[in-house]
Length: 130
Length: 297
Image 1: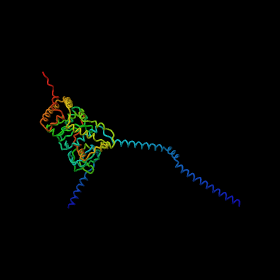
Image 2: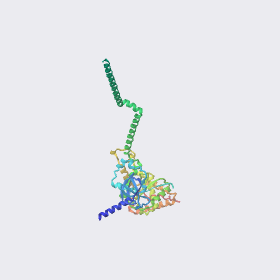
Image 3: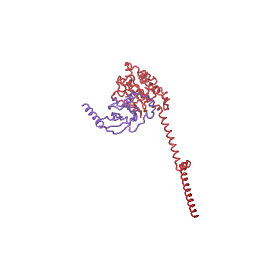
Image 4: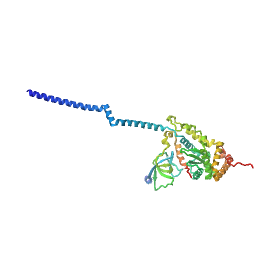
């Protein structure tokens, strides 16, 4: 009975993933960021990603997303990422321009975690002529 | 009998001749083979075919690729330019002080981005990139630090804003003060950039990599906005700049003037912000500098 239940659960999760359709591959723009569990800036992180990391954009009938967020897959995790952080072309990343300097920053797990969260906490804009 | 002997002689000479001819043919083949390993001849053939030139070109290409590879390898060991180093240091300051600043919390949309953006545009600050971070701490009140994407990062304390019961315009006016402080170079003047300037855009060897200038800059930012602050001269210049910018917009100028009054009263009674006049001296003086001179009739 227990194994049957397990089988049913795994089948249902397979069905959920099978419904996800890849609609494009984009690249992550900020220095460090996170794929989030929910479409919220304070939602827990599923994984941390760095600039230039490929992100598969997904479409699913079971997942509805607000206009500023995207439903995406990174390294086997399905979650949410801000649209403004994605680029169609591979961006010019600090990590690839100055790789040894970036390595030299010696960021530990805690630094990576907070650096990933920082990006989403910024309210950003650029002024234009009125 | 003689004729038979003659015939035998003729036959043997014929055989000898044919043997000699055969021997000559073998030699020719050997010579041909020798020609193949005769490099002098080969060189001539190659030069006639243009292969020698192609080989030279290939060699040149290989040398070029080697040179480019060397440049690429060297470029990996470069410090970023000063603007990027400043920005990285600022983000490092925010990351290392994440728990003190407490910026990672669920905040409602205060709408300060649109109000502040409109204010900047109204005052003529065009094509300026701004990042705002609202933090939930009273250990820092406000800050303006350089960003790495040719922008400025402005920070504002939520408990401080709540203590003053600030509206969007008042928050924007405080952010404007910090924006101007940054724009007028006061922030850079207070942060010692010597170390960062020395390493900016220079090459380093793996063993001699220096992270300390970045760490020092990040720490200088922490000290500046939590302890050291700005001097009276800088604050006077800033207040005058605010006065000039806001004068044509009487309504906003008035909001600013009233805000300084409230700020002055609050810091005099709220112990949590008693260090405020030490960092930003001082709202009381700012009010005096802004007030019209009294004329004795």
